[in-house]
Length: 596
Image: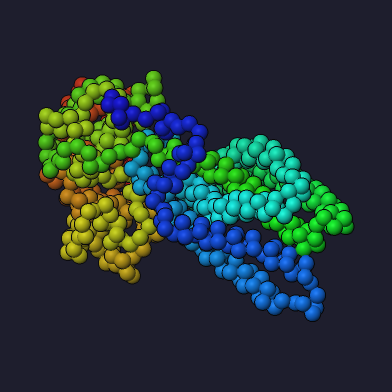
């Protein structure tokens, strides 16, 4: 098998823990607006610088304070400083929010494009909710770091450096008392930040599992209710919610340690400064204004410690989220346009000793060799689990063979681009899926052009769908509901057939498209399929032999092996199990006729 098409068996690409470099590379890949980011950070720095002036104004005001000597110009300067600080801080926050949102849009755009390009094998190994969680929850963590914490980090660093510098200039002895507490604070933050990263990654993984459960249960809510399985699904959801609660408690314990311990260190430092400063004031070595300014600068130096703590905690969360995002983005993907463009597929399609397995050591298809002649009808028959649907998946190139080759004409199928090959295929499954939207949108789904009304109506007419569509209140603009729930099974089948007509495929694949329909719907769908099959290479998965008696070729598959081939009459004569199938279904048909 071509190694480019082989993923790990769990459907993922391997990836180690996300480094700070990979985190910043992910951010850079979204091409954030550097002018806006720089402007926001400059404004944040400006706001911090203005705040550093306030204690100096206050010092002068306190040292010369009396009602007679009030300097209203100085008070006006303080008020102006506060106003300027508020304005620059507000603008900076808005710009950072804008940049953060654009970064999230960029990451989500990459994730969405990536998810649509992932091979089917990946979706076999990962739940829908897991992918939704990566798109919604993990990117939100990255956004929070930028919009809520980045500005505080930059301004906090500046505030700490500026405040400490001014504290030293005011009184270096008191500044030394304060600096003693810094190693204690760092010693508290570092291990707790690492713990927060582990807890955050566990929380995000559990959130992904919870989202998967929600997506699965709510998408099959009719089955849940029809099976009286509400209590069972509730217990499963309750267990997941409880696990999320436990992760929340762990996160709460870390935060409960960070805040009070840092607060304790800072309060102790404040008490020491006030006590020591009071002694200096009483001895005349320090003015009251100096002490007030010193305390204000101390507060300005203390507040950023909490902000920096929050930033590093959020950064650890973002690294955990980044690891999941990068792992997904590094997963090998399909390349639909890579390869030779296939203009038409009215050529023989040959399976040459094709083998395939979903899991190592568990082959589903074994050494299959046969040929589909252009314009003929070939039926695949066999017991359930024999690998019939896998043949369709291999033909659609949802998977690549482990060994052997599928050829179109004389060339290997893998040489042609996926997009051009799949454009030549029309597929009508047993349960025809519809997308939420109108009937018009569903018939034209997947076309790379906008069909005219005449083309749309003609396709529906050939599929025996036009009459019932015209009878609906909004005709072709009728909403079908999620997964087409507002239409009957027969109506959905005929819309799928109309879609195939509009694609005008060279190859038609039918997965027993009439097996679950009532007799009236089955009659119309059979007529529609007869129209659709005319002149096309048709491959049918058959559960009822009555639908394939007239096929040009019948392939009988058992446990992944091809054990018989020929027409219906040839297989009845030569293949014991096929003959048994035919006799059993004939008896079943006769008994239904007798009861009728």
